Image (tube, rainbow, N blue to C red; front, top):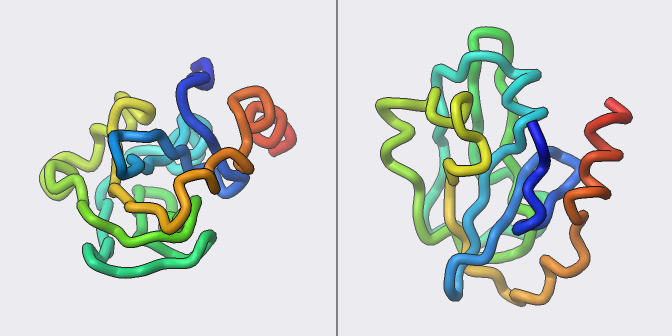
Length: 126
């Protein structure tokens, strides 16, 4: 699975993509492959103000549970409610399925995150 160039990444395996004045956040293809079949996505607190790298939610699979982190500081403004009934959407389309939206304190913060090539090196390193 190729890493899309239209968003930024963090080494903890989240992607972030501008959507107007907010940013969509999801997990990467390599992350969902490592987790396996997802059975739960949640614990996202809409209205929470988070620092960059602070826990924003959790994904659980048949293999493991993993925290999801905020790639930038900001306020969580939405959770993708469709994941309540179909968390496996992420398995079939990790780059087309956002988990939460965040309104960043400073939108320019994403410029300091990894591009697709940089994230690919992180993912390849294991």
